[in-house]
Image 1 (cartoon, one colour):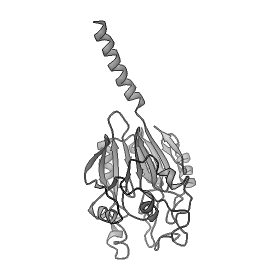
Image 2 (cartoon, rainbow, N blue to C red):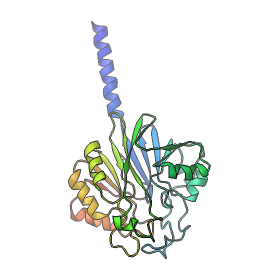
Image 3 (cartoon, one colour):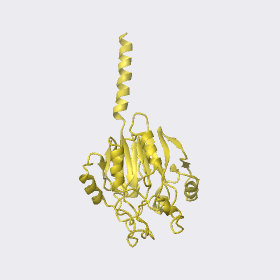
Image 4 (cartoon, one colour):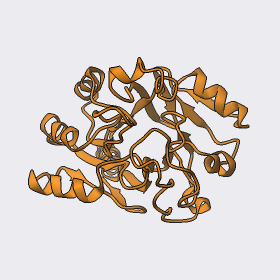
Length: 283
């Protein structure tokens, strides 16, 4: 009887310790580049690893005379790439997947992409293990789900000037048993599919690209901004929002200072984290 009791206590203790030790961490690198870790599994998201000012500004966008990226990396690319188990590329725009990422990332590392088009591009760049997240995919105990994004207003996609430059993009929901669910929205405006995903998955952590990036001739942004953060807090008041994709690329019109002021004005300080390069937080 005593042996059974002790065994039961051991099992319960082990279970509770497993839950207690379960943690998710997010480290902001720069722009939309970040490292999401589920205990021992680390995903590098949307790597842009160029040095400051290496690229020309994006033609046809706000502040195109400014060179990209505007900010330095917080560490060497080699250190940033340490302990990365897989790379997730939401889409292949330069500020999410650049020449330096192609050059520096180990060609045998798993690269997770949204569709066959992006897979073909990255395979041609020499990567040997490219996996398409068409619906859901499991990687080392973490389940990834594809959420379709919309990289700008509908009118943009019928404009011959921009339609070829704009592309499909995905958000990703990361889930693992006994750990917090994370929704990385990617480059998207708010859509009904975002609403549905929030309702379905109830993510505790939400990474939003909130620089309100703009192309010329359109007043609306091609990604989210301050009002979207407000809407997210209203819809998901118990979730922790991580606001990124600001200050680093020429076409972003909302800065981190703007976001800080907005968050303070609306008393969202407990809901929204606005990280700087290299900042890391465990949840």
